[in-house]
Image (cartoon, rainbow, N blue to C red):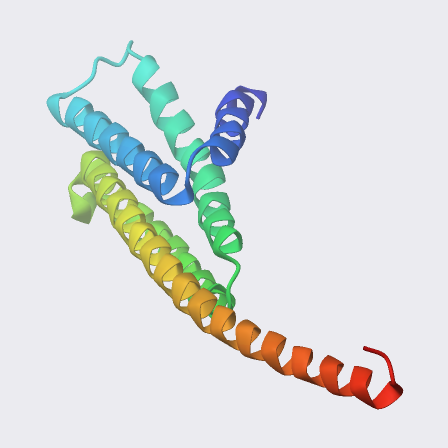
Length: 176
């Protein structure tokens, strides 16, 4: 577990420095490229003595399992709007279905082209998650801007009404 600490620390530093949409895009593409690379290496064939690829496969799989859920939740909490609160159940359900499909793929690895086939599915899944995350960030930004515009108009109306009430109260109490 300690070997995963550097990637967790790096991610937590990046989330405070980079916008969520850029981070989700970069992380998803990175994992997509990494899994595609590993699939191509395994497809070509690896000597049994080359345990570096096994370690890289383990590290990439474990770190993806740690990073992706946190990344999705951090994007949602960053947008913190009514729409993001409505998205929590949908995203939870999608993540659970993804876990079930991943387990199903692992049990039927022979039917999917062996380990390289499963790694290609991992790469495609990472890129799809990234694209959906980018779409979610875009729609959250659009919704936040629309809510802000409506809130600004309502706030100005309330300020005008409040000013009139204060003026009426001042006149009634004899203060000016």
